[in-house]
Image 1: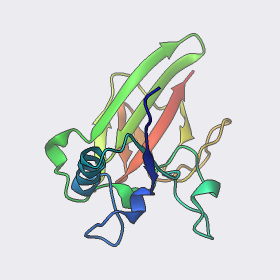
Image 2: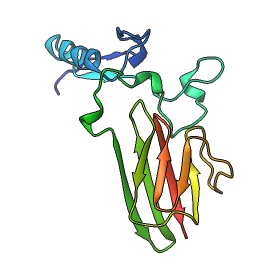
Image 3: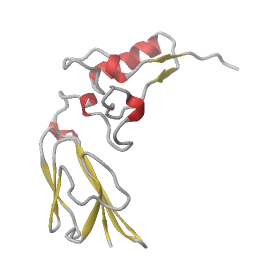
Amino acid sequence: MERKSGVLMHISSLWGEYSSGSFGKEAFQFIDFLKESGFTYWQTLPFGIPDKNNSPYTSYSSFGGNFYFVDLEIQDDEGLAFGYIAKKSEGTWVVLVNAKMKSIEINTSVSLNNGVIYIDSRSANKNGIENPVGVKISGKTVTLDPLTATVIRIK
């Protein structure tokens, strides 16, 4: 059996230009360093937004990542907005993600006017979100705030 070793370090412990580490070049440099040093694993703490006591273990959402970890140096042309549509027996599901630092409009192939939003920029609710934050629907177009993801179900 081959012996392996690893490091336990949160992404926020990396050096970063904006007071915290991110999933940018510093993370890649750290991975290269680990490999060169003979390590096999990098274990991290959860990536969610910490609670009021700064604990990543009791995040407000299990779906939302901490926006502080998005590398601000990434350029917009790197495909940071995407989505997909899945047609199931219980309805059509639309999943959209905006990982850019600016609001965007995404045009879909289906009308979303009768859609129920289950995930917005702040929360997730299995019964739907009555007043979603960061997500606006108009016909086949969805406007997403920066660093926002949503899940919409059309019955």
